[in-house]
Amino acid sequence: MTALPAHTEKKLGLVIDLDTCVGCHACAVNCKEWNTGGDLAPLSDTDPYGADVSGTWLNRIHSFEVADGDDARLVHFPKSCLHCDDAPCVTVCPTGASLKRTEDGIVLVDEDRCMGCGLCAWACPYGAREMDAVAGVMKKCTLCVDRIYSEELPEEDRIPACVRTCPASARHFGDFADPESEVSLLVAARGGYDLMPEQATKPVNKYLPPRERTALPTPARHADDGPPLKGFWKWLDGALERLP
Amino acid sequence: MKPAFSVICFTVLSGTGYGLVVWLALSTLLQRDPAVAMIGYPLAFIMISAGLLSSTLHLKSPARARFALSQWRTSWLSREGIAALLTFLPLLAVHWGLFVNGAHWHLAAVLAAIGSLATVFCTGMIYQTIRAVRAWATPMTSAAYLLAAFTGGGVFWLALQMTGGASVSTPAALIIGLALVGLMVIRHFWWRNLAAPSTSTVATATGLGGPGTVSLFERPHVTENWLTEEMGFRVARKHAARLRGISQLLTILPLAILLLVIMGAADMPLPATVIAVLFLTGTFLDRWLFFAEARHTVRLYYGASHA
Image (cartoon, rainbow over the protein chains, first blue to last red):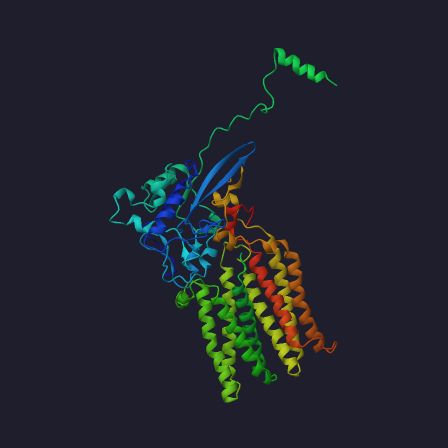
């Protein structure tokens, strides 16, 4: 059903810490690996060993430069489905393949109903959905629904693949409906925010801003200049200056 | 946005066909030359059906289109499908009346016209409700779709009347002329609206604005992906002004010629149907620009300065 639930019992989602993310792409790689070998159809690649390689990814890492005067810093920015409360991708779906679950708020695609029209990807302002060129259906982050409720996996693996693999602990998984959960506390403590709030999608996933840092001292001189010359070098410098 | 040929063919061909159904209903009710209906309805039927078939080419898994009527509560695409299928019922009844019973069934004609307008409105609403493409998210979108269908159908109706040697009443010509003016006005405001940037920026997309400026340093992958190809279409913008000029010319000129001939101020330079097809080409180009020029917010994550 493409009608959005008025309320979900849980609000499962991710917190992504832009302060600690090192941009290693391990989360994207593990996401790809898990989801290409999971219960669903593989995440296909076209021309995988050629020059024009292209593939379906549920998580991609963009890198942005944030410049303020002479100071600039590099912020790595992982982006996957935000599992919005007001998900526009769900309501536009004509077949009922797109859905938001009432029990945990996860936004999913029922691949057996998807006709591959692509309208949901147009409706998503974030680019969280990608058409699989081989399967002919829309793919998106499932929040590793096949891991988090698994009874076979060891306890510590029952979290999304991207969170499990992050070497910098920049990704956190939890229930935002519980104000005492780790993710809720993180968002409260660090000022977690929504992406594109003006699009009125009410994303569940939150981003933590990079922490304030002491600005790097502006270099007093360029590398070409150096400390004042002394002795022989001072004489040579002057002698060369005096040449016509 | 990527201008998918199948979707453009669908919206232009079916749209014009639906517009023609509206004009045929009007002329049937007003007892204007019933002979035109014998050619006009089959032509509209073919245009509508060809357009709808073309739209299925856009689907990656067309067999699952059987589910596409189920989500009418929330989805305009689902509503469009239902409206399109329901419209076929009175439209087939009209044909039955014309070719089997030899009669004009007014009720069927009116229902077909209402269904036609509803279908075109749903098509416009599919795009109008996509907030991520700011240029589309305006009531002008559905208004422009309705006006384009109404005017295009009017031009075909006019061309059929003139080919059949029937007289065209002044009010009918006047209404089509006014619809054309409306279409021009809508396009003007549409282009003004298109030029304005979205309130979504790289800063709001990343939340990294603060006092500084944000710009993309590195894309996720070195090659293009489905998102950049589907939502990052750039070709149209280079030639936008020229293409707009051509589409305007192909919209105004054919209709101006038809109206001048009706007023007796000129002789017919070309067969009327050729002129109608020229008009259709203009609509096609305008629809291509509708997709190609529209900017999606996802571009902000791939280096665009504005959406």
